[in-house]
Every structure is written in C-alpha cells, then in structure tokens.
Image 1 (cartoon, rainbow, N blue to C red):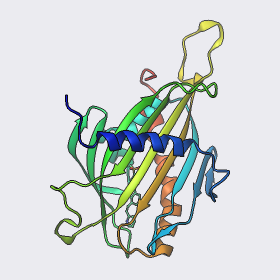
Image 2 (image 1 turned 135 degrees about the vertical axis):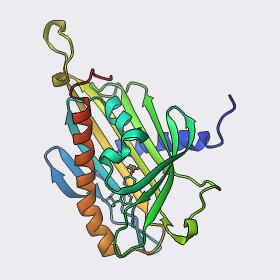
Image 3 (image 1 turned 90 degrees about the vertical axis):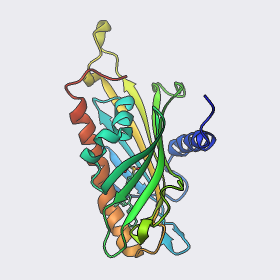
Image 4 (image 1 turned 180 degrees about the vertical axis):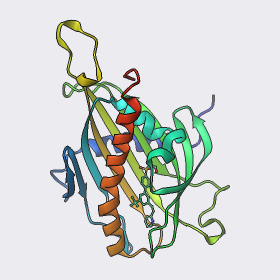
Length: 239
Ligand SMILES: CC(C)(C)c1cc(CCc2ccccn2)cc(-c2ccc(S(=O)(=O)CCO)cc2)c1
C-alpha cells in the first residue's frame, strides 16, 4: 500500500517525542508543581506571542498494569469519554491505520476563554527493547495537531483551535516470581511519562490557564491511571 501523506511526520514526531520524554527533568528549567504519591508533575512557564503554552511533563509509577495496557486505553476512541473529563465531544474523522487515527475533539470551555477544539493524529507503537536498564519494551502513544480541509479552524466561528503535542511513554518492569511461577499483576510495574504542550490558539488569560492547568492535569492523570487499573484488574495481562 502506498504510504499515507502524514506518515513521515507521524514517524518523525513519534521518535522525537520518545526522546523528549526520556530526557530527565534535571535540566531545562522544569519546576515541580504537583506531587501525589508516585506522581510528579513538572511544568515550564513559556509563552508564545503572549499566549501561555506551558510545557508539562508528568512522571508516574503504576503497579499492576503493563505499558501496552496503558497505551491501549489511552489510544482507544471507544473508551475515551469514560476517563477524559476535559472533552465534550469526540469524533474519529480518519483511520490511517489500526494504530493511527485522526481525532476531532471539542473540549469543555474554560471560562472566560472561548471554547476550544483540537484536531490531531494519534499514533501508538511499541519501540524496540531498551536495554539501557533492566526495563522491558516501551509503548508510546503520540498525539499531534494536524490540519484537515474538511474540518477548518473555528468551524462556524464556534471554537478556537488549539495546537497540541502529547505523548504517553510507558515502560513495563516485571519482577519475576519465584521458581518460574506464572507472572501475576502483583509482579508488574509500569513507569509512565506523560508530556503535553497545548497552545491555546488564541487569547486566554494566563492566570486563568495556569490555575486550570495546575488543578486539571493532576486530576486528569490520576483519573486515567485509576481507570486503566480498574479496567485491567480482572482481565488477562496484555504484555
Ligand atoms: C483543561 C486542560 C486539562 C488544561 C486541557 C485543556 C485543553 C484545551 C482546552 C483549552 C485550552 C486552553 C484554553 C482554553 N481551553 C486540552 C486539554 C487536553 C488535550 C489533549 C489531551 S490528550 O492527552 O491528547 C488525550 C485526548 O484528549 C489531554 C488534555 C486539556
């Protein structure tokens, strides 16, 4: 089959986002702004022509699920509205491949800013085993804004279109049970790094955005990880 026109960009951004996610938070001006158990959330305060685009990086350790399971539920359109509370409406407007979809999402309005929507491709992939640690395979989902002539910006002037790049990078660690016993969920741990940059695409009060981000992002990640743990607990492990 001939390559989809977006494929070179999808491949480039996915590789770049994996590298970016694996960079530590020691350098680059990251400031810790939220902590809850194993979850640590960092941000950089950045503006682009007067708009808050604060990059966010969250690190978390989730016990009892694999990276494949985390990415499967993060990617799946069927369950998105179960865990994603910032979205009012979600449509898959194109299926590029089984592991690559294009989404149009209308997000809940953040008063007093006008309502936003986001059009982005979403790609899930497993990357070769990283033997730089005792880690196992890595799974990643990358979401990156894209244009589509059938869905122009500010459709009938209703929503301002945000541009976003998001990646969820998950590495599974297995603590082998004694004497070759079957691996159970008690033996698996998943290290996740969630990175996001959301450009509001139009004026929005910096103070309001920063307050919303500070409140909503920790809620968002906690809710999502709790959702995956709950969905997986009675199912066979998806390695
Ligand atoms: C409320 C807050 C959490 C900060 C928020 C606001 C907005 C855009 C709405 C917005 C932004 C700026 C100004 C006004 N409204 C988008 C998102 C957002 C976008 C994408 C993803 S995802 O990880 O790709 C999963 C698929 O949905 C998660 C969250 C979050």
